Amino acid sequence: MPLRSEPTRWSTVAKTFHWTMALLILGNGAFALWMDGLKPSLHKINMFALHKSVGLTVLALFFLRLAWRAFDRRPPDEPAPAWQRVAAHTVHGFLYLLIVCIPLSGWAFNSAHGFPLQYFKLFNLPALVDKNDDLSHVLGTVHVYLFWFLLLVLLAHVGGAIKHHVVDRDDTLRRMLPFGRAKRSTPTPPGETP
Image 1 (tube, rainbow, N blue to C red):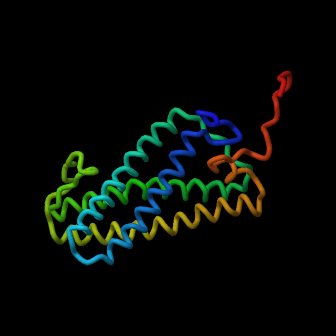
Image 2 (tube, rainbow, N blue to C red):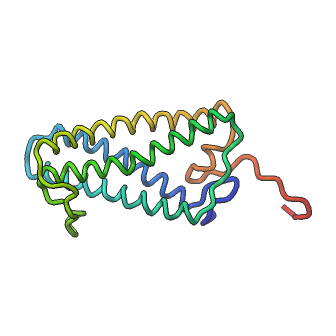
Image 3 (cartoon, helix red, strand yellow):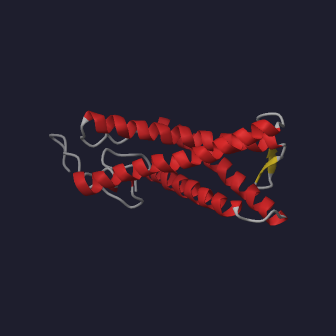
């Protein structure tokens, strides 16, 4: 598998970022919904600490992914009407924005609550805002609603990928699958052997 992306598929590194972050985000969201139903206890506090650390991991991976994207070339978009390309780039833009805003809103919510924020019990992170009960209520609500909005955007993202795969029968989804390879290869330039 290529280290850098090719015209017909994403690189191993890009795929690893994509699928690792997808699993962490969805898993951490489901984990948070489950935790919410737990009775107050030391166990629940430890579960929330784990949730926060995973959220911070997603945030760190996002910035590493951006750094990689600056270095890696991107496969060209599959041919599609202009409105579909605009829609796809808009959905990706919202995904990127939400991947940053959700952990930051959780971090700010934790700060406004006055709780220390530890990363996997290894080190503390600074507070983003001062302790403020009213602000913590607002930030907690924002954090939850951003997650539900993310799920809607993910539905559009997954729906678009499935549409490309089933209806358009192109390589959009295939080239991002962990072991995916494009059906069609790029034409060999004249004078070169395939």
